[in-house]
Image (tube, rainbow, N blue to C red; front, side):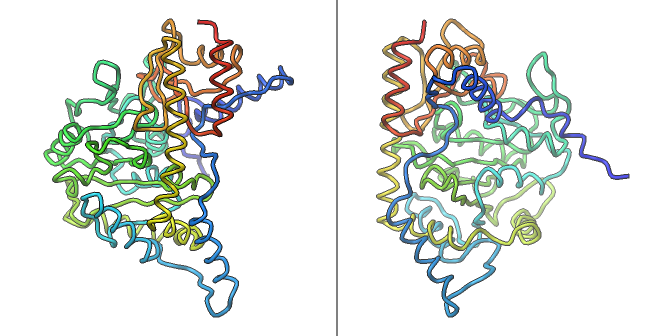
Length: 409
């Protein structure tokens, strides 16, 4: 008899963003004349840049010609792109070799899929609040144990609280952790880890033979040159860290889909020799994956040229100007807020210590604005709320004007 994976039944609730969409749709149905202003899901809105579009078109034209048509490529990614990525790391002072880079269809699937090469009894630690994929994929894999509804957490997950007291970056685990998820700039808080903070985690991981899964999807939004954009800027990280990146936010590929992960051959785990993690992931990718779209890889290669980088930076600057508008509006309303200076998200303290979903309903009903409840990112997110700077300027301005005029504080 075929049986289902019962771990799916342990997922605490519906995935955060579909629940937001469900509530917004219900409100729209009940108020058909109201225009809903969206500042919730972090989906890009501005068009692909000319250099990227040119790269995509050129590859399409090659595929339309019998003499230049290509089919399957390397499952790890096309070599010119991997070499360009390695060169990009070098400009930032990090050592990454082209054969340590695995091109994929995005950082989200990578951060979920990567844990399949680790043991089922591995102890997982996550920043709290955290991007839901980190926890949910480990629940599905059977590592999380049962959900404790009274505390809003899973019994076998190690939660590393991020709050105002610690500047929204946690201390290293006090006990044992085998897999440690870190995200910087952080989604949802907008906080960026310092070199000193990352150094402490690298030291912990090396001491305990743990692995850091470092999500750098928002690295291109860091303006402060003193803040690290890669875990590999930290000495010793090549022994203990895997890094993920997404072209989604840096180049507007949310619908185009492309990312990469780096698995250094020098990575060492508790029960594996040097290089084994790299070999296992190579085997996994060759088994499950035939490589990312060759058309999309051409667009990514164009994004990494000097012209492509300059154009992408202009788009990032546009979103960060939106973030500055959000921050200034909240500050004018005397709402405590964080982030938005080196990240595209603004993290606010709900007025009057309201529950996150209660503030969601209040913001929607009074100002007709959709945001993201902090509790959806973990127990430490309760009492906070995320606003996204991804949006057309006129829509961001309209939403903020509605907040100023209609939100009853």
